[in-house]
Image 1: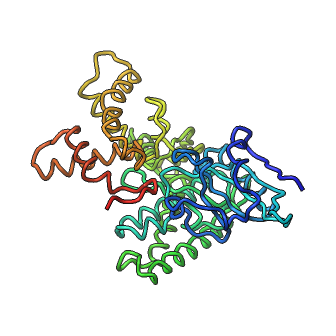
Image 2: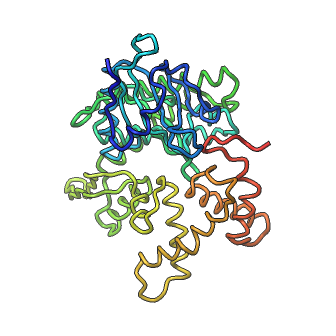
Image 3: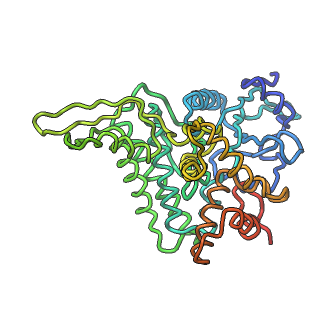
Length: 407
C-alpha cells in the first residue's frame, strides 16, 4: 500500500521527508522538545520539519485510521470557528516499515508556540494562585467550546496546552479524539462534560501531589471544584438573563462592560421590561470570545492572548491620554504607540535571548517589572530602565518556549 497523506497542501511538502517508515517511538527527538510533549495514551513525538533550529515544529501522534481522520476533521472545524485548539496539518496512512509490516496511522498537528503541558508548568516554581489561574483557563476553554456546540468528552489538564497570558494562562485543546459537534449542547451533555473534567483534573493533580511536586497544601479535589465553579459562573453570566434596575441609565452598558472584562464581545442583546418585577431583563444573544484581542488587532494588527491584549490596550490608552494630537484618529495614534512604545521595547532583546517569551507577554512583564522597581525606589523608574533591568535579570531564566534555563 503506498503512503497516503491527506492534509493542507502547503504543509505536506514539509512533512513528506519525515521517517514514516519507522515506528514513531524510534524517531529521534530533540531533548529541548521532549519536555513539551506532556503525557498521552498514544505514542507522540515533537519534531522539526528540517534540521534548522528555527524550522516549523509538528506534533505527530500514532493512532488508528478511523480516529485519526475523525480527529483531523474535528480540529479543522474547530480551527474554522477560531476555537482555542491546535491546528491540524495531515493524516498519514499506508505506513509500512522496512520489512513491509504495517505501521499505525499518524495524525500531524502544528505545535503551539510558547505553550507547555501542565506537568512542566506545575513542577516549576508555581504557587497556589498559579494553579487556580490554570484551572480558570481550563474552565474558560470548556465554556468557549460549549458555546460552539462542541462536546469534548475528555476535558483534562493533560488534553490541553497552556500559554502565559499576562498574569494568567490561556488554555488550548490539544486532543479532540473523543469530541463531537452538536447544533446546541443540552444541559445534560454539558453536565456530563463537567463530570468528566472534575474527575480528570482531581486525578491529575492528585498524581502530582503523590509525586511531591504539587504546591504544598493544595487540595486536588478543591482545585478541581474550582474549575467547575468557575465554569458555572462564566456560563451563567453569558447565558442566563440578568435582572437590571430600569431606573439605572447605565445598567445595560455596565452589563456589557462586565462581559467585555471577561473577554467576550456581545454582538446582539435582548432587553425586555419585566412589568411584574419592574426590572430590565438583559440577555446576551450572540457572544464571541476575544473582545480585547479583536480590538487590539483592529488597532495595530498584533496577535495576542486576551489578557495580554487588555494590558496592551491599557498601555495605549495611557499613551493616548498623554500624547494624542488634536483631532488625531485613534488608529493613527495607535500606530504611533506601536512604533514609539511597544516595538522599541521588544527590539531591546539581544539575539541570544530572543524567542524565550512571546513579545506581548514580554511587554506585559516589563510593565509589571516597572511597577515593582518603582515601588521599591519610591518613584517611577521609567519604561526603558525597567526593560533593561528585566532583560538582564529576568528574561535569561524564562523558558516559555522550552529553552533551558541558564546556569
